[in-house]
Image 1 (tube, rainbow, N blue to C red):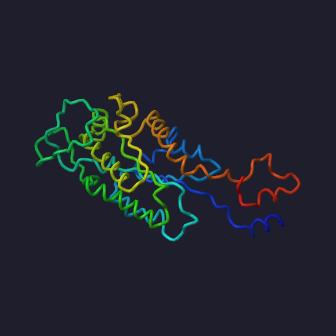
Image 2: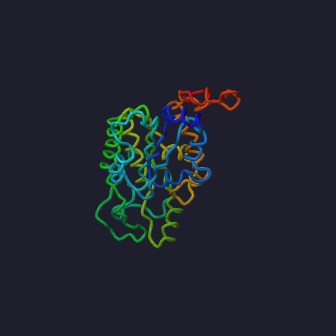
Length: 281
């Protein structure tokens, strides 16, 4: 009883946090073999990895809910790292695309190439998805706005990582869309524009960025193996993302100690001497 009273008199053990903020690719990241689960495993007993992924969300909605996830004026609870991973839904087509060749195999497009969409033209392959779509300029501003908010909430840019959306395998995603009773609602070339905008925002803000869209298509490799349904990550894709993300996160958390002593180091006669310290080992 005395030990319990002594423990209750000590300050709570502060457990650092890494926050993963994004859409379904983040929400699903805690599934077996997911990149978020791998990150949590890597950081066990050093910090908590919190999954704040919201399937179907875009940056327009994300910037609204961000203050509910990280509030201002609570610096001791400020995350040691935050990933912001949106774009797969923002890049959904608002209007039917004109000039896209349906017989063109999916592959990398130059990020500098502008996507030109004219008035909606008859094109039965495409499906309009205006609810998720966010215009490119607004997408970039939303990302910038979230970075500004986090800085104002005590999370410096050195703790942030923007993640650009992965490429889209149009053939596989079109099959998935058909299973859901709709038509193809995204194009890889359009996703590439959003990825490019994400990279530019990171450069402008001076923060780290992981450009999945480019990395997964380097050397014209077949990126379809990285995707489970043409849009979401497969086990190989999760492994790919984690392998490139970890070096960025590691440098942000490298100074974190192992919380609470190794069991062999706990004082046998008076364990409270070891366990009621500051938690560092």
